[in-house]
Image (tube, rainbow, N blue to C red):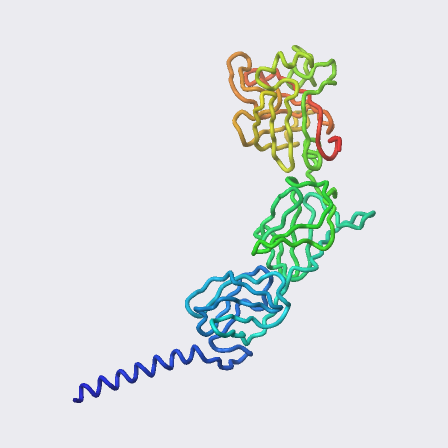
Length: 389
């Protein structure tokens, strides 16, 4: 009898505990700081496009979340019976309450939330176009975007599609974002608002236009090769003595001297390898090189310019192809034999002359320190100094 009585008492205790537990989750009691027990909105304040979690009593059957301003969201996930996860929708009002729709009733979260949007974003820099007043930037310039809700920005897209992810922003707060304009890879001729994407994928724009044609800063050694964006080079059809290719003395001659090839004979010398008339090589900021041959082959890689490696007064520095396709070289420097026995693809060249519109490069024979091949080129397309645009 005593044993049965003890068991009955135990059952009663468990029943009371379970009832008390669910009662606590259903009740909403005041907490210090204005919150409520069992109810939360995280984060708060929040920004449009930002992930947000709404917790409250028995949300397992929720069908809709309505943000301030009547903006409803049905795309959300559930974490257990009490938490809903979604993103703050565009168009939500700046302040108010969130409502959760349940079967047969609606539950108003008793917490006032503040929502910032990315509206009225304004771009600024150190320079302006004197005629239009548009913000003007160039390579390596700092561009600052001021506004509200900018912590929701996950990506900035420059003209031409070049993307800068938020992890690469030097500075980012809800009120300000700072980026550094890259040296290449975007359309510098555009004049348009800056395009941004929020974490939810929504596209927003600055309220003012940006002139991307500013000078900015480009390392001076790159300007003759790339201008302020890119340059395309080909054989120089106006080379001295009509000889854009040949050999001569290393650290002596400034162009073809001993053995020369006329411009019209270039195809006979290099046409079979695709390096004949019409072959092109492009140098892009900051260090991309593309070789396009007449046979349709395209090779890509990286290059570097070192103006500390000039040879006396004969050359001013060196051009080096540092990465990319094994067959990538300059026009005319084909894979082949030098001095009858050495087979290679030339990668390092002395810069003999470089005016920004024409240039002469030299390649020293591997087994004859006193002999070099000379290559003369001119610009046919590009932006910036000597680029024709």
